[in-house]
Image (cartoon, one colour):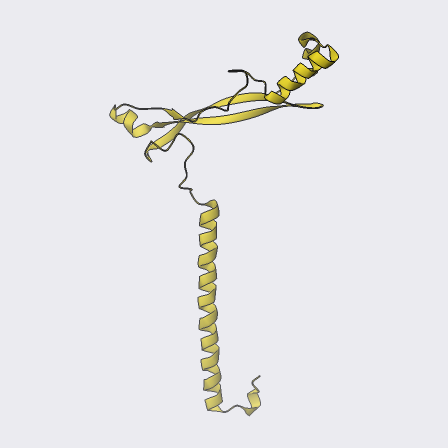
Length: 149
């Protein structure tokens, strides 16, 4: 620790040089930390280079034009919920403006036990179990599966 009363002019100049070095070191460290922070923000919140499925064959000129939604019914004992799958459709706006062939791209929908059906395997197994084990008819089960959107 420096004592002000015991310092001469040379000591003051030495102390000033030491403090300037310390300031420079802290400024460079601060600049490095700011760069790391900006990089982390860009990696976490920046635009991702990864596109959605079905977008790979198109160029950067694509815009989402519409999205399809597919709903499935999932049975959880004492709970029925709607599971919604969103599948955007992509088209090339530049191709549309130029009048060239425009291919609309969209990812495949989730697989279903019953083609174009709403029921998930869990719900179907519950219905079959109820029918076989307890002798319920599907009509008797209908009030139990009332769902409000």
